[in-house]
Image (cartoon, rainbow, N blue to C red; front, side, top):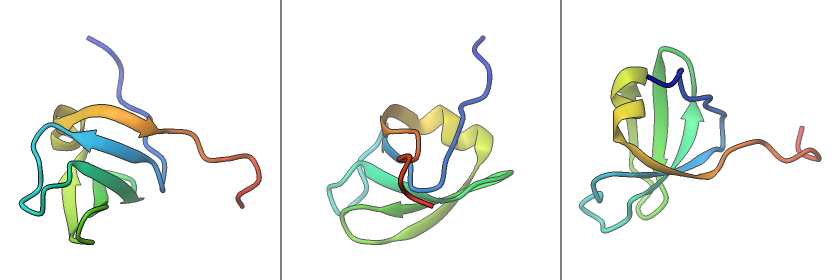
Length: 70
């Protein structure tokens, strides 16, 4: 079984199910025991516990923060 997924703020992920607005791409806004996400389609904010988040992630679109952003 692989280790835990490394999660960064501003990381973009594609989840397994589409949101009712039609988008399946989300941006991480908070990390820790719970992961805060914002839908890229409609701006809806949700919180998932880390275990649920890791189960729902299908693909990491952008993972590491860019070198110039601080």
